[in-house]
Image (cartoon, rainbow, N blue to C red):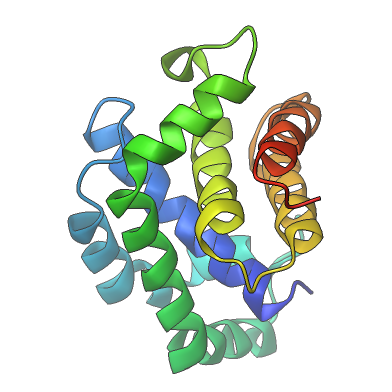
Length: 170
Protein backbone atom coordinates (compact mmCIF):
# COMPACT_ATOMS: atom_id res chain seq x y z
CA UNK A 1 0.00 0.00 0.00
CA UNK A 2 1.45 3.35 -0.99
CA UNK A 3 1.36 6.49 1.11
CA UNK A 4 -1.16 9.29 0.69
CA UNK A 5 1.57 11.65 -0.53
CA UNK A 6 2.75 9.12 -3.14
CA UNK A 7 -0.82 8.71 -4.35
CA UNK A 8 -1.14 12.48 -4.63
CA UNK A 9 2.08 12.65 -6.65
CA UNK A 10 0.84 9.90 -8.92
CA UNK A 11 -2.38 11.85 -9.43
CA UNK A 12 -0.22 14.86 -10.36
CA UNK A 13 1.62 12.67 -12.87
CA UNK A 14 -1.65 11.55 -14.49
CA UNK A 15 -2.82 15.12 -14.96
CA UNK A 16 0.60 16.34 -16.18
CA UNK A 17 0.71 13.45 -18.63
CA UNK A 18 -2.68 14.48 -20.03
CA UNK A 19 -1.64 18.15 -20.22
CA UNK A 20 1.63 17.20 -21.94
CA UNK A 21 -0.22 15.06 -24.48
CA UNK A 22 -2.79 17.79 -25.21
CA UNK A 23 -0.18 20.50 -25.64
CA UNK A 24 2.41 18.61 -27.70
CA UNK A 25 5.18 18.11 -25.13
CA UNK A 26 4.59 21.33 -23.19
CA UNK A 27 2.88 21.71 -19.85
CA UNK A 28 0.40 24.31 -21.07
CA UNK A 29 -3.01 24.43 -19.47
CA UNK A 30 -3.44 22.00 -16.56
CA UNK A 31 -6.90 23.23 -15.61
CA UNK A 32 -8.85 21.16 -18.17
CA UNK A 33 -7.20 17.80 -17.35
CA UNK A 34 -7.32 18.69 -13.63
CA UNK A 35 -11.08 19.22 -13.90
CA UNK A 36 -11.50 15.89 -15.68
CA UNK A 37 -9.46 14.10 -13.03
CA UNK A 38 -11.23 15.83 -10.16
CA UNK A 39 -14.69 15.11 -11.52
CA UNK A 40 -14.27 11.67 -13.06
CA UNK A 41 -11.06 9.73 -12.68
CA UNK A 42 -10.70 9.98 -8.91
CA UNK A 43 -13.98 8.04 -8.66
CA UNK A 44 -12.97 5.47 -11.28
CA UNK A 45 -12.21 2.16 -9.56
CA UNK A 46 -9.74 1.02 -12.21
CA UNK A 47 -7.68 4.22 -11.98
CA UNK A 48 -7.80 4.23 -8.17
CA UNK A 49 -6.81 0.58 -8.07
CA UNK A 50 -3.84 1.31 -10.33
CA UNK A 51 -2.79 4.30 -8.22
CA UNK A 52 -2.96 2.57 -4.87
CA UNK A 53 -2.18 -1.10 -5.54
CA UNK A 54 1.38 -2.34 -5.17
CA UNK A 55 0.99 -5.28 -7.55
CA UNK A 56 -1.26 -6.57 -10.33
CA UNK A 57 -3.82 -8.13 -7.98
CA UNK A 58 -7.40 -6.94 -8.08
CA UNK A 59 -7.71 -4.10 -5.55
CA UNK A 60 -9.89 -4.94 -2.54
CA UNK A 61 -12.88 -2.71 -1.79
CA UNK A 62 -11.14 -1.43 1.36
CA UNK A 63 -8.30 -0.14 -0.81
CA UNK A 64 -10.74 1.67 -3.08
CA UNK A 65 -12.51 3.26 -0.09
CA UNK A 66 -9.14 4.40 1.26
CA UNK A 67 -8.15 5.80 -2.13
CA UNK A 68 -11.33 7.86 -2.32
CA UNK A 69 -10.87 9.06 1.25
CA UNK A 70 -7.27 10.13 0.58
CA UNK A 71 -8.06 11.97 -2.63
CA UNK A 72 -11.08 13.60 -0.99
CA UNK A 73 -8.95 14.81 1.90
CA UNK A 74 -8.46 18.54 1.48
CA UNK A 75 -4.75 18.38 2.38
CA UNK A 76 -3.89 15.86 -0.33
CA UNK A 77 -6.13 17.45 -2.93
CA UNK A 78 -4.67 20.89 -2.13
CA UNK A 79 -1.19 19.37 -2.64
CA UNK A 80 -2.23 17.98 -6.04
CA UNK A 81 -3.62 21.33 -7.16
CA UNK A 82 -0.65 23.31 -5.81
CA UNK A 83 1.81 21.02 -7.59
CA UNK A 84 -0.03 21.16 -10.91
CA UNK A 85 -0.54 24.89 -10.89
CA UNK A 86 3.05 25.40 -9.75
CA UNK A 87 4.45 23.29 -12.57
CA UNK A 88 2.30 25.19 -15.07
CA UNK A 89 3.19 28.62 -13.64
CA UNK A 90 6.93 27.91 -13.61
CA UNK A 91 7.08 25.66 -16.67
CA UNK A 92 9.67 27.73 -18.52
CA UNK A 93 12.10 27.83 -15.57
CA UNK A 94 11.49 24.13 -14.83
CA UNK A 95 12.13 23.11 -18.43
CA UNK A 96 15.31 25.21 -18.49
CA UNK A 97 16.60 23.50 -15.34
CA UNK A 98 15.87 20.08 -16.82
CA UNK A 99 17.45 20.98 -20.19
CA UNK A 100 20.59 22.29 -18.49
CA UNK A 101 20.91 19.09 -16.44
CA UNK A 102 20.14 16.52 -19.14
CA UNK A 103 23.39 16.44 -21.02
CA UNK A 104 22.46 14.34 -24.05
CA UNK A 105 18.68 14.57 -24.08
CA UNK A 106 16.52 17.40 -25.33
CA UNK A 107 13.19 17.70 -23.52
CA UNK A 108 11.03 16.82 -26.56
CA UNK A 109 13.02 13.59 -27.09
CA UNK A 110 12.38 12.33 -23.54
CA UNK A 111 9.66 9.85 -22.88
CA UNK A 112 6.43 11.53 -21.77
CA UNK A 113 6.40 9.81 -18.36
CA UNK A 114 10.03 10.72 -17.69
CA UNK A 115 9.46 14.31 -18.77
CA UNK A 116 6.39 14.68 -16.54
CA UNK A 117 8.09 13.09 -13.53
CA UNK A 118 11.08 15.39 -14.02
CA UNK A 119 8.85 18.46 -14.21
CA UNK A 120 6.96 17.48 -11.08
CA UNK A 121 10.11 16.76 -9.06
CA UNK A 122 11.98 19.80 -10.39
CA UNK A 123 9.09 21.98 -9.28
CA UNK A 124 9.34 20.48 -5.79
CA UNK A 125 13.10 20.95 -5.64
CA UNK A 126 13.02 24.53 -6.90
CA UNK A 127 9.80 25.90 -5.42
CA UNK A 128 8.81 23.74 -2.42
CA UNK A 129 11.66 24.23 0.08
CA UNK A 130 9.69 22.59 2.91
CA UNK A 131 9.69 19.24 1.11
CA UNK A 132 12.95 17.38 1.85
CA UNK A 133 14.94 16.93 -1.35
CA UNK A 134 15.68 13.29 -0.54
CA UNK A 135 11.92 12.60 -0.33
CA UNK A 136 11.36 14.33 -3.65
CA UNK A 137 14.11 12.34 -5.37
CA UNK A 138 13.07 8.99 -3.88
CA UNK A 139 9.42 9.50 -4.79
CA UNK A 140 10.24 10.62 -8.34
CA UNK A 141 12.52 7.65 -8.92
CA UNK A 142 9.92 5.17 -7.65
CA UNK A 143 7.15 6.75 -9.72
CA UNK A 144 9.39 6.74 -12.82
CA UNK A 145 10.17 3.04 -12.27
CA UNK A 146 6.49 2.23 -11.86
CA UNK A 147 5.15 4.11 -14.89
CA UNK A 148 8.16 4.54 -17.18
CA UNK A 149 10.52 2.23 -18.99
CA UNK A 150 13.09 -0.13 -17.56
CA UNK A 151 15.67 2.69 -17.53
CA UNK A 152 13.40 5.50 -16.32
CA UNK A 153 14.45 5.27 -12.68
CA UNK A 154 18.15 5.69 -13.50
CA UNK A 155 17.47 8.40 -16.07
CA UNK A 156 15.32 10.46 -13.69
CA UNK A 157 17.77 9.91 -10.83
CA UNK A 158 20.73 11.21 -12.84
CA UNK A 159 18.99 14.38 -13.99
CA UNK A 160 17.37 15.15 -10.63
CA UNK A 161 20.70 14.64 -8.85
CA UNK A 162 22.25 17.34 -11.04
CA UNK A 163 19.29 19.66 -10.51
CA UNK A 164 19.43 19.18 -6.74
CA UNK A 165 23.16 19.95 -6.77
CA UNK A 166 22.62 23.06 -8.91
CA UNK A 167 19.93 24.26 -6.52
CA UNK A 168 22.11 23.33 -3.52
CA UNK A 169 19.39 21.01 -2.21
CA UNK A 170 21.71 18.05 -1.48
